[in-house]
Image (tube, rainbow, N blue to C red):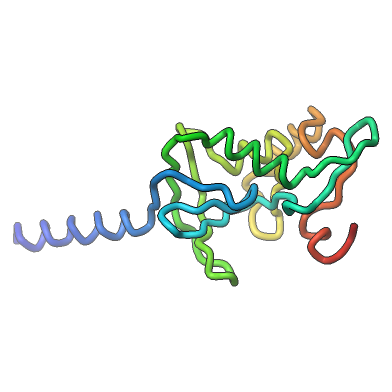
Length: 155
């Protein structure tokens, strides 16, 4: 009986470990990172594409996608990123909720206006989006096209 319980505990620990990814992250873009060669799409958010421009409050244009990616890289820095797998997308990327230093990365991106709540898949970050919009943070300081529309050619 003790052997059976020990085997079950080992199996449960292996399953839990398989559901988590941890390590140094490389930023691919503001909603995709890579850890140990595994591409991870952050769950529940959508960030501007690297070639996407947005407009500041003063009307000048800036590369909001690149700005978001660089801000994410600075936020993560050399911290260990811990991700909990939620699924796989159509591009075979792992979908996950990730944290660094105890902060939810998706929540941080939306709260700072570098990403939007991707309501099509999740409403987890709607409060952070409302706070960013009210504070005119990031993209909310001026005009922008939501990333899902930009990818469809709305520019």
